Image (tube, rainbow, N blue to C red; front, side, top):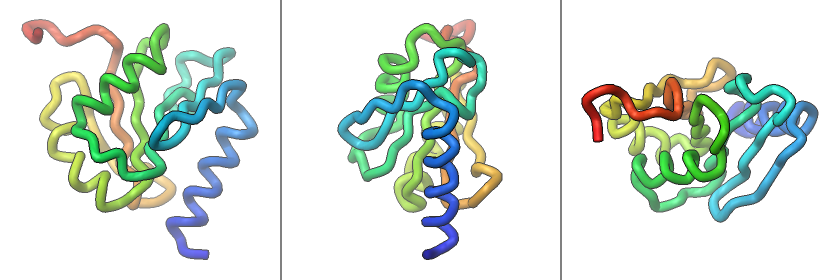
Length: 121
């Protein structure tokens, strides 16, 4: 098992243990811990397969599936896809991106809160 496969398995096991919602979507899984809506790590849209989508489209998926949470988080598990999306996520005034601590093959992107920033629209 590669380091990336171990990191992915660890992350999925964490979600399975702590989240009460594990909902498949076309390109991965939406994970929610409804008891802990402010825990970013436990409320996210996981991108497990190349979605062929732009960052803005993934943000819209997160808006839909994480409605009610103050944050939006997208975890991209495919290194090449994450690297391609990184510039758009970093350019977004609503989002920031950084590698996940357990393995650099992840792109973790999220908004600070669900409201658009001042001056945007």
